[in-house]
Length: 324
Image 1 (cartoon, rainbow, N blue to C red):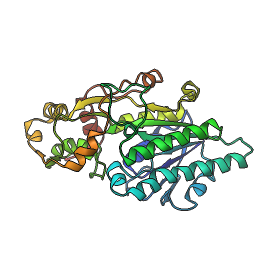
Image 2: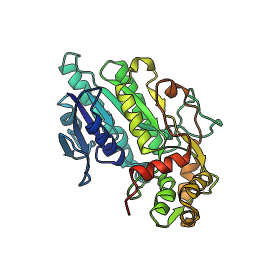
Image 3: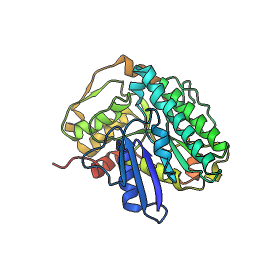
Image 4: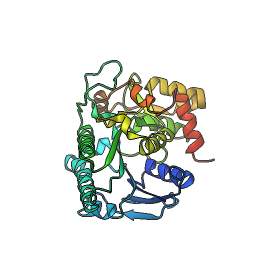
């Protein structure tokens, strides 16, 4: 039985991944899931263990890896807007906690005489890139983040690569697009409005648009995110060589194109619920984000995502929209 640890297992993507693994197993065998997070939904995914706490707490990482899980999905983080507003918390949770995890894994590796070497999938972000951008960011474009969140994710990518080079883990970092449409309540991510302007109108609620509709961004659905993670966790990682960070595929579109896709799917009444309310702070953050990618390397390795934003909306309706 494959032992799988999901850090951030109570969050939206962590829960979707856990439900998927509980149903499908792992590489043809049952999966024994351990979920770790600050809390869990009452109707959450089944798991052998649900452990409540913060990865940033002293000793938390060592306790979690003492059972030597075969695969670790590291999804735990505070989101972009919060990391920008609370500098110390962002670095403590997003970077130093990852270093504690890797240090704990190194201790287990050495205690096993070098036999223990788990697959570690680190959930990174396109925030590792900073302007100025080419029209489409290719696999060779450098990481030069312009936000604290992006800097924290970039540091973690380097740590995962270096600890992998030392043979301690078999690590890979996947740079997720903005995941849209996110179900549930809004979070503190600066990108949250990309989901809000679709989710709220579909649920007959008003939505606020804090940026011009000319803003272009890179998206994928939660369903695609689960596919990215499972592919990264199970693929032959030798194809990556020393470059263990991958840009994930997605869809580039403007906010105006999002809104038109909403009109096509749900009609003019849904679109009428979107209200422009400019927010200079969010506009400033979004201005430093990438807009489009050429993800040839990921495509060659079997990663796939949606082809149009209407498909992303229909995925939300099928998977997550509340009934009634």
